[in-house]
Amino acid sequence: MNIEKLEKYLEEIGEKSFRIKQIRKAVFCDGVSSFEEISTLSKELRNRLDENFKILSFSTESILEAKDGQSVKALLELVDGNFLETVLISPKPGDWSVCVSTQVGCAMGCRFCATGKMGFVRNLTAEEITDQVLFWRQYLKKMQNAKLKSQNDPEKSLSDNGAGNLKLKNLKLIENCKLKIENYDISNIVYMGMGEPFNNWENVSESIEIKICSPSVRVRFPFPLRALRRGLKNWRRNFRK
Ligand code: SF4
Image (cartoon, rainbow, N blue to C red; front, side, top):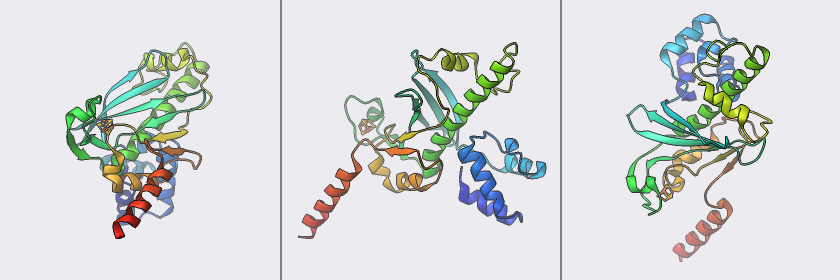
């Protein structure tokens, strides 16, 4: 979600500044999927926002779950018709890691990699990168709601109990999961999906700065940042000579 655009819109329609805080909390922390769900806003404002803004900058093409229940992959369609993949992984009980893509395609051309074979198409924006985290937060939230509601009223079907567009197999995945699900929040964000993050550094660093999650969430790269900084320092020093 483009929070700056939203902030500007709220200002234009004369809303108070605390509204942005309410929306930010609901979308970034609580994992709401639509403005309609933000009960702290007036009905009129919710309708206006739903008409004028989208929380996610892509639509869901497909979701595939691994048989062992330890990972889920989503194929998402961007507004320009390109596709990206993102994965939710549970490396250990109680931990959820989101693997985000940073580019459509990749220029690096590693032989073993399907993305490399596509070639480079375009960089993802900071919004498109962070929205992948929001997407999985919404997914986990729906899982949690569906499970709670079915526990309270096991007779009800998932479509009746507010699980939205979650299919039965999604809930079964969590119920049958070999891992003990101790929480439904994200603990890690890893920049290891489609693309080379360092080739889109401006948007990648902006996506890290957007406060999309609790401070306890760890951010990881496919390369050790400390080593990278040290390497850059050496390179600059040598280059100046
Ligand atoms: S996505 Fe990663 S593994 Fe694939 S071509 Fe790019 S750098 Fe290589």
